[in-house]
Image 1: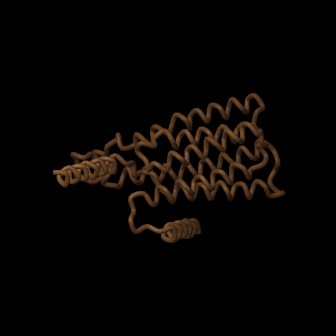
Image 2: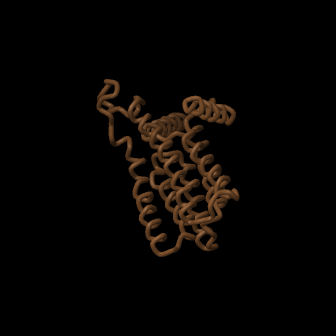
Image 3: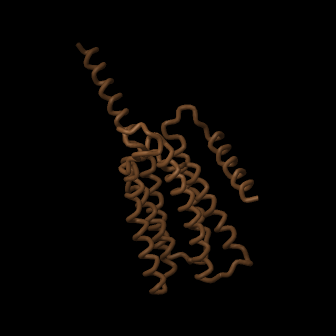
Length: 228
């Protein structure tokens, strides 16, 4: 009798795991996040160099470029997944590239309100001459964007979101300078690589850090060849 109960509980746990895996959002790319984090660190290096202008406008343009790079990488990978991956198709349709299930994009849509709020608060801060608040605002709202869809992503992503919120709160309280690019460059480099590794290893049994880094380097090499 007890053996049957244990067997039934094991089947329930297995069924629950399968349901969770079915609901898991697979549209985000770990490599895209890592590339975006690397772009943030590279921007910090460039903007901290002597030739780069030490003005609010120049640094705002620099971080705007980083945002556009990150947006293009992450949402480009998302659209590629949505268009070509069988998981993004409607369950009743077996026809390739047709009847895509828009509900599969809900986790990505859930992240839009915090990012939109970040744009409004950025404009308000600049309008009132409070550029020193921008790093904290960006970190906190990006952290909220990570936690917004945590139920459809690996659970560890929630802690990445908390990391961003904590760093943003600390920056707001310490009131650092907007012209010092290192805090946000390092915070986003660490956070995006952590998030990228979590997404990459999610559901993979034979994945390794070496394989992830090799894929990352190959993608960079392919990009460089394409630009040439």
